[in-house]
Image (tube, rainbow, N blue to C red; front, side):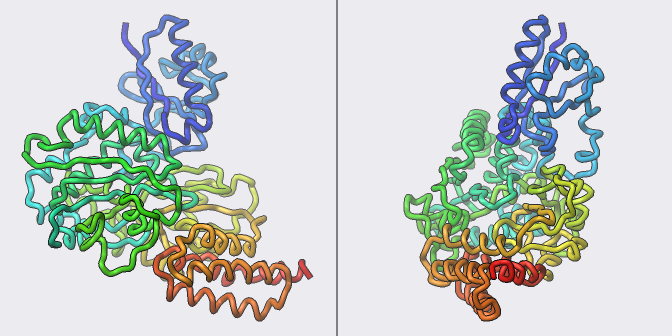
Length: 517
């Protein structure tokens, strides 16, 4: 009797809508019918409006059904879904779904495809190829490959990854470290979590390659406390990788060492800033460090340290496996490669879309997202997290790349896009930006600590109709001060959503004052 393989995501997003109950129901139905199945808890494909998405492998092809509830499972069995039978929830062959077929999945090529903790499955899908290539190269050549690929930090600052690695490689230190910033705290972002839960071995491979490149033998993955599933997946994957020989004292028989540990985040947004993160790993309060010195010179425990986020490190293996030229052929201008965009908010089809830089914001929202979930006109989208600018429909033709967004006084950040329809109150959203900064500030610098509180108060005065013209002028001055004088991006960028709301939606502030009066 042949065993049929069924895939049900163990991704936190799928679990939130009942994936565990679906998996349990499938096992129960199979047992009751005497059917031999193999149940694989894979990662999510990123089509969150279809979760839980169940896939059945038939003759080497996977067929998708979704969104499946536990109560649907008996009907699926009756419809012979184990042999790709027709059912109202049938979506067809997974790889032919337009959402997946039209992406350029390089970093996320295995997410949703493989068993996340199976080293054999990982290697069968080209895993470890990048590490093997790196082991055959000199450290300087690894760094050159990353530099030539054009890879830039995917965490927000977009700093060239190869330059950062070269700086650490050349810095003097008795011990060097690789630190992965997995403190994914921006609104509307979930790519880091998806990757750690769906392909954790990829992140381990990327960090190991970074260690080989700069001479680091120890790494840390700093995961936000709100990601228990990702933390468990990473801890389990480290054990699997160590047992399989591509972590530890003798990586794949090369006599080169690299070990990894997981550190749980301290639950503060500010710990996503690299120096606060380092303070937290060291057991201190998460506060900004003065720069210089840069972490590349004096980072974790005072030693040269590479700090990259999950997507940056997870992209390195494909560059080493297929070459810098292969990766650099994707994208446009100085924005090379692909970006996993995360679409959320008031949108019909929210999820993860990995595309080469260059598609427009409007294409992402309407062609991929299907417009607003409410059916009302889309009024704005915030790109880049809670510190990102609000763009109006007139700017939806902006290409999604670093330079085009900078020209719009905006940023791509971590690639999160949150959509709002025409019921949104932009004065209230501006107030929230300042309130968020006030709550999350580490308190070390005055412009952020005090400026955010005064900013919130000024917007409240405007919304209440108090001296609107004077307070608007003061708010602009305050924003300029915060941008110019804050120690880090929290205070320095909190004015971005405020200024963009003032520029593109001034009537909301005037109306707020008029309504209050």
